[in-house]
Image (cartoon, rainbow, N blue to C red; front, side):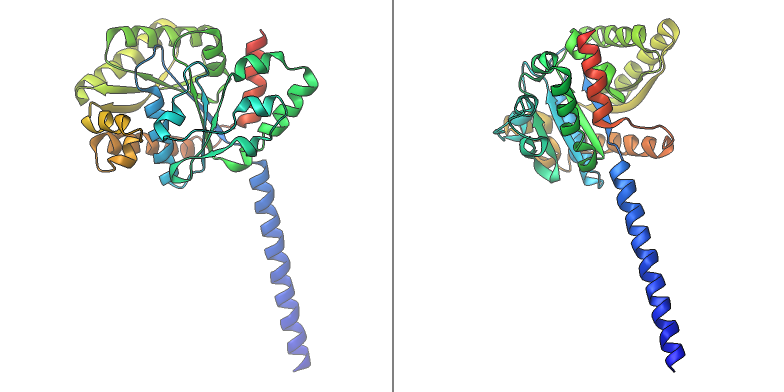
Length: 303
Protein backbone atom coordinates (compact mmCIF):
# COMPACT_ATOMS: atom_id res chain seq x y z
CA UNK A 1 0.00 0.00 0.00
CA UNK A 2 2.81 2.34 0.92
CA UNK A 3 4.60 1.67 -2.40
CA UNK A 4 1.38 2.35 -4.30
CA UNK A 5 0.90 5.65 -2.41
CA UNK A 6 4.49 6.68 -3.16
CA UNK A 7 4.02 5.87 -6.86
CA UNK A 8 0.77 7.84 -6.92
CA UNK A 9 2.48 10.85 -5.36
CA UNK A 10 5.31 10.59 -7.93
CA UNK A 11 2.80 10.48 -10.79
CA UNK A 12 0.93 13.51 -9.42
CA UNK A 13 4.21 15.40 -8.95
CA UNK A 14 5.26 14.54 -12.52
CA UNK A 15 1.94 15.82 -13.87
CA UNK A 16 2.34 19.05 -11.88
CA UNK A 17 5.85 19.58 -13.29
CA UNK A 18 4.64 19.00 -16.87
CA UNK A 19 1.76 21.43 -16.31
CA UNK A 20 4.18 24.04 -14.94
CA UNK A 21 6.49 23.60 -17.95
CA UNK A 22 3.57 23.86 -20.38
CA UNK A 23 2.31 26.98 -18.64
CA UNK A 24 5.78 28.54 -18.71
CA UNK A 25 6.09 27.75 -22.43
CA UNK A 26 2.68 29.33 -23.07
CA UNK A 27 3.64 32.48 -21.16
CA UNK A 28 6.93 32.71 -23.06
CA UNK A 29 5.15 32.32 -26.40
CA UNK A 30 2.71 35.09 -25.44
CA UNK A 31 5.56 37.36 -24.40
CA UNK A 32 7.37 36.79 -27.69
CA UNK A 33 4.20 37.37 -29.70
CA UNK A 34 3.89 40.57 -31.71
CA UNK A 35 0.77 42.25 -33.00
CA UNK A 36 -0.08 42.60 -36.67
CA UNK A 37 0.08 46.33 -37.51
CA UNK A 38 -2.31 47.40 -40.28
CA UNK A 39 -2.34 50.95 -41.60
CA UNK A 40 -5.78 52.02 -42.82
CA UNK A 41 -5.39 54.80 -45.36
CA UNK A 42 -6.87 56.46 -48.46
CA UNK A 43 -5.66 58.57 -51.36
CA UNK A 44 -8.12 61.34 -50.50
CA UNK A 45 -10.40 62.39 -47.67
CA UNK A 46 -14.12 61.74 -47.39
CA UNK A 47 -14.09 58.07 -48.44
CA UNK A 48 -15.18 56.68 -45.06
CA UNK A 49 -11.73 55.42 -44.05
CA UNK A 50 -12.21 55.95 -40.30
CA UNK A 51 -15.65 54.39 -40.39
CA UNK A 52 -14.18 51.30 -42.05
CA UNK A 53 -11.35 51.15 -39.47
CA UNK A 54 -13.69 51.39 -36.47
CA UNK A 55 -16.24 48.86 -37.67
CA UNK A 56 -13.49 46.50 -38.80
CA UNK A 57 -12.00 46.71 -35.31
CA UNK A 58 -15.39 45.80 -33.82
CA UNK A 59 -15.81 42.86 -36.22
CA UNK A 60 -12.31 41.55 -35.41
CA UNK A 61 -12.99 41.91 -31.69
CA UNK A 62 -16.24 39.96 -32.07
CA UNK A 63 -14.14 37.17 -33.59
CA UNK A 64 -12.09 36.99 -30.39
CA UNK A 65 -9.09 39.11 -31.37
CA UNK A 66 -7.68 41.80 -29.10
CA UNK A 67 -7.75 45.06 -31.06
CA UNK A 68 -6.21 48.49 -30.49
CA UNK A 69 -6.82 51.48 -32.77
CA UNK A 70 -4.29 54.30 -32.99
CA UNK A 71 -5.82 57.49 -34.36
CA UNK A 72 -2.92 58.85 -36.39
CA UNK A 73 -5.03 61.35 -38.31
CA UNK A 74 -3.30 64.11 -36.38
CA UNK A 75 -4.92 66.96 -38.26
CA UNK A 76 -8.52 65.73 -38.01
CA UNK A 77 -8.98 63.00 -35.40
CA UNK A 78 -12.36 61.32 -35.85
CA UNK A 79 -12.26 58.07 -33.91
CA UNK A 80 -13.20 59.67 -30.60
CA UNK A 81 -16.05 61.49 -32.38
CA UNK A 82 -17.49 58.28 -33.86
CA UNK A 83 -17.08 56.50 -30.51
CA UNK A 84 -18.61 59.45 -28.69
CA UNK A 85 -15.70 59.35 -26.22
CA UNK A 86 -13.32 62.16 -25.32
CA UNK A 87 -9.85 60.77 -24.40
CA UNK A 88 -8.11 62.46 -21.47
CA UNK A 89 -4.58 61.79 -22.74
CA UNK A 90 -2.88 61.33 -26.09
CA UNK A 91 0.22 59.68 -27.53
CA UNK A 92 2.01 63.00 -27.07
CA UNK A 93 1.88 62.45 -23.28
CA UNK A 94 3.80 59.19 -23.79
CA UNK A 95 6.30 60.80 -26.17
CA UNK A 96 6.93 63.58 -23.64
CA UNK A 97 7.35 60.98 -20.88
CA UNK A 98 4.35 62.27 -18.89
CA UNK A 99 2.37 59.02 -19.12
CA UNK A 100 3.08 55.40 -19.96
CA UNK A 101 1.31 53.79 -22.90
CA UNK A 102 -1.20 51.98 -20.67
CA UNK A 103 -2.37 55.29 -19.19
CA UNK A 104 -3.35 56.74 -22.58
CA UNK A 105 -5.43 53.75 -23.66
CA UNK A 106 -9.13 54.59 -23.81
CA UNK A 107 -11.87 51.98 -23.61
CA UNK A 108 -14.02 51.65 -26.71
CA UNK A 109 -16.95 49.31 -27.37
CA UNK A 110 -16.60 45.53 -27.62
CA UNK A 111 -13.37 45.51 -25.56
CA UNK A 112 -11.56 47.64 -28.15
CA UNK A 113 -8.88 50.01 -26.89
CA UNK A 114 -7.94 53.18 -28.73
CA UNK A 115 -5.27 55.84 -28.53
CA UNK A 116 -5.57 59.42 -29.66
CA UNK A 117 -2.44 60.45 -31.55
CA UNK A 118 -2.54 64.18 -30.83
CA UNK A 119 0.33 65.92 -32.64
CA UNK A 120 2.48 62.80 -32.36
CA UNK A 121 4.40 63.00 -35.64
CA UNK A 122 5.88 66.41 -34.90
CA UNK A 123 6.86 65.30 -31.41
CA UNK A 124 8.43 62.03 -32.56
CA UNK A 125 10.77 63.81 -34.96
CA UNK A 126 12.06 66.02 -32.14
CA UNK A 127 13.15 63.15 -29.86
CA UNK A 128 16.77 62.50 -28.98
CA UNK A 129 18.01 58.93 -29.43
CA UNK A 130 17.72 58.05 -25.73
CA UNK A 131 14.21 59.52 -25.55
CA UNK A 132 13.18 57.60 -28.65
CA UNK A 133 14.49 54.32 -27.24
CA UNK A 134 12.51 54.91 -24.06
CA UNK A 135 9.36 55.64 -26.08
CA UNK A 136 9.83 52.51 -28.22
CA UNK A 137 10.26 50.34 -25.11
CA UNK A 138 7.11 51.92 -23.67
CA UNK A 139 4.89 51.50 -26.72
CA UNK A 140 6.15 47.94 -27.33
CA UNK A 141 3.95 46.89 -24.38
CA UNK A 142 1.03 47.05 -26.84
CA UNK A 143 2.32 43.85 -28.47
CA UNK A 144 1.36 41.98 -25.31
CA UNK A 145 -2.10 43.55 -25.23
CA UNK A 146 -3.17 43.26 -28.88
CA UNK A 147 -3.39 40.76 -31.69
CA UNK A 148 -4.13 43.50 -34.22
CA UNK A 149 -3.24 47.21 -34.12
CA UNK A 150 -5.14 49.30 -36.66
CA UNK A 151 -3.57 52.66 -37.44
CA UNK A 152 -6.00 55.17 -38.91
CA UNK A 153 -3.85 57.61 -40.88
CA UNK A 154 -4.65 60.98 -42.36
CA UNK A 155 -5.90 60.97 -45.93
CA UNK A 156 -3.82 61.96 -48.92
CA UNK A 157 -0.28 61.58 -50.13
CA UNK A 158 1.71 63.69 -47.66
CA UNK A 159 5.13 62.56 -46.43
CA UNK A 160 3.70 61.85 -42.96
CA UNK A 161 0.92 59.64 -44.32
CA UNK A 162 3.33 57.77 -46.60
CA UNK A 163 5.67 57.18 -43.65
CA UNK A 164 2.85 55.45 -41.76
CA UNK A 165 1.93 53.46 -44.87
CA UNK A 166 5.47 52.24 -45.50
CA UNK A 167 6.14 51.39 -41.83
CA UNK A 168 3.16 49.02 -41.39
CA UNK A 169 3.18 45.24 -41.81
CA UNK A 170 0.41 45.70 -44.33
CA UNK A 171 -1.80 48.44 -45.77
CA UNK A 172 -5.57 48.57 -46.04
CA UNK A 173 -6.42 51.07 -48.77
CA UNK A 174 -9.97 52.44 -48.85
CA UNK A 175 -11.42 53.91 -52.03
CA UNK A 176 -14.87 54.74 -53.40
CA UNK A 177 -16.24 54.54 -56.95
CA UNK A 178 -15.71 58.28 -57.45
CA UNK A 179 -13.15 58.85 -60.26
CA UNK A 180 -11.06 61.22 -58.10
CA UNK A 181 -10.94 58.67 -55.28
CA UNK A 182 -9.80 55.90 -57.65
CA UNK A 183 -7.18 58.19 -59.22
CA UNK A 184 -5.80 59.19 -55.81
CA UNK A 185 -5.82 55.57 -54.66
CA UNK A 186 -3.75 54.60 -57.69
CA UNK A 187 -1.39 57.52 -57.00
CA UNK A 188 -0.82 56.17 -53.47
CA UNK A 189 -0.25 52.66 -54.82
CA UNK A 190 2.30 54.08 -57.27
CA UNK A 191 4.16 55.89 -54.48
CA UNK A 192 4.29 52.67 -52.47
CA UNK A 193 5.55 50.67 -55.47
CA UNK A 194 8.37 53.20 -56.00
CA UNK A 195 9.55 52.49 -52.45
CA UNK A 196 8.79 48.80 -51.94
CA UNK A 197 7.19 46.47 -54.49
CA UNK A 198 6.78 43.77 -51.84
CA UNK A 199 4.52 45.88 -49.64
CA UNK A 200 1.20 44.15 -48.98
CA UNK A 201 -1.68 46.41 -50.04
CA UNK A 202 -5.24 45.22 -49.48
CA UNK A 203 -8.05 47.20 -51.08
CA UNK A 204 -11.60 47.86 -49.84
CA UNK A 205 -14.17 49.66 -51.99
CA UNK A 206 -16.58 51.69 -49.88
CA UNK A 207 -20.00 53.08 -50.87
CA UNK A 208 -20.31 51.10 -54.09
CA UNK A 209 -23.81 51.07 -55.62
CA UNK A 210 -23.73 47.32 -56.22
CA UNK A 211 -21.50 44.24 -56.24
CA UNK A 212 -20.66 44.56 -59.95
CA UNK A 213 -19.44 48.13 -59.52
CA UNK A 214 -17.29 47.17 -56.52
CA UNK A 215 -15.72 44.16 -58.24
CA UNK A 216 -15.12 46.18 -61.42
CA UNK A 217 -13.08 48.75 -59.46
CA UNK A 218 -11.14 46.08 -57.56
CA UNK A 219 -10.32 44.22 -60.77
CA UNK A 220 -9.26 47.31 -62.70
CA UNK A 221 -7.00 48.57 -59.90
CA UNK A 222 -5.38 45.13 -59.61
CA UNK A 223 -4.79 44.80 -63.37
CA UNK A 224 -3.34 48.30 -63.73
CA UNK A 225 -1.09 47.95 -60.65
CA UNK A 226 0.30 44.63 -61.84
CA UNK A 227 0.74 45.73 -65.46
CA UNK A 228 2.32 49.16 -64.95
CA UNK A 229 3.80 48.96 -61.44
CA UNK A 230 4.62 45.26 -61.13
CA UNK A 231 2.84 45.29 -57.76
CA UNK A 232 0.23 42.75 -56.66
CA UNK A 233 -2.88 44.08 -54.93
CA UNK A 234 -5.11 42.00 -52.68
CA UNK A 235 -8.88 42.44 -52.74
CA UNK A 236 -10.44 42.44 -49.27
CA UNK A 237 -13.96 43.21 -50.41
CA UNK A 238 -16.42 46.06 -50.34
CA UNK A 239 -19.11 47.85 -48.35
CA UNK A 240 -22.12 48.88 -50.42
CA UNK A 241 -24.17 52.04 -50.00
CA UNK A 242 -26.32 51.62 -46.90
CA UNK A 243 -28.63 54.09 -45.21
CA UNK A 244 -27.70 52.50 -41.86
CA UNK A 245 -24.17 53.89 -42.17
CA UNK A 246 -25.42 57.45 -42.62
CA UNK A 247 -27.81 57.13 -39.66
CA UNK A 248 -25.07 55.69 -37.43
CA UNK A 249 -22.67 58.56 -38.19
CA UNK A 250 -25.36 61.04 -37.16
CA UNK A 251 -25.79 59.09 -33.92
CA UNK A 252 -22.00 59.16 -33.37
CA UNK A 253 -21.97 55.38 -33.22
CA UNK A 254 -20.34 52.62 -35.28
CA UNK A 255 -22.91 51.21 -37.71
CA UNK A 256 -22.09 47.62 -36.73
CA UNK A 257 -23.33 48.40 -33.20
CA UNK A 258 -26.29 50.63 -34.07
CA UNK A 259 -27.45 48.39 -36.91
CA UNK A 260 -25.94 44.93 -36.32
CA UNK A 261 -28.21 43.30 -38.92
CA UNK A 262 -27.56 45.86 -41.67
CA UNK A 263 -26.02 44.88 -45.00
CA UNK A 264 -22.97 47.07 -44.27
CA UNK A 265 -22.35 45.20 -41.01
CA UNK A 266 -22.59 41.84 -42.78
CA UNK A 267 -20.05 42.98 -45.39
CA UNK A 268 -17.57 44.41 -42.83
CA UNK A 269 -17.72 41.07 -40.99
CA UNK A 270 -16.87 39.27 -44.22
CA UNK A 271 -13.84 41.55 -44.63
CA UNK A 272 -12.72 40.79 -41.06
CA UNK A 273 -13.02 37.04 -41.73
CA UNK A 274 -10.79 37.43 -44.78
CA UNK A 275 -8.14 39.19 -42.70
CA UNK A 276 -8.18 36.45 -40.07
CA UNK A 277 -8.18 33.60 -42.61
CA UNK A 278 -5.32 35.14 -44.61
CA UNK A 279 -3.40 35.57 -41.36
CA UNK A 280 -3.78 31.84 -40.63
CA UNK A 281 -2.84 30.86 -44.19
CA UNK A 282 0.26 33.07 -44.04
CA UNK A 283 1.27 32.15 -40.50
CA UNK A 284 4.89 31.84 -41.66
CA UNK A 285 4.96 35.61 -42.30
CA UNK A 286 6.46 37.28 -39.26
CA UNK A 287 4.77 40.38 -37.87
CA UNK A 288 7.28 42.91 -36.59
CA UNK A 289 4.81 44.36 -34.09
CA UNK A 290 4.39 47.91 -32.91
CA UNK A 291 8.06 48.16 -31.92
CA UNK A 292 9.23 47.37 -35.45
CA UNK A 293 6.59 49.71 -36.83
CA UNK A 294 7.72 52.68 -34.73
CA UNK A 295 11.40 52.11 -35.52
CA UNK A 296 10.65 52.08 -39.25
CA UNK A 297 8.28 55.05 -38.92
CA UNK A 298 10.91 57.23 -37.29
CA UNK A 299 13.41 56.20 -39.96
CA UNK A 300 11.02 57.30 -42.71
CA UNK A 301 10.12 60.53 -40.90
CA UNK A 302 13.78 61.49 -40.54
CA UNK A 303 14.78 60.53 -44.09
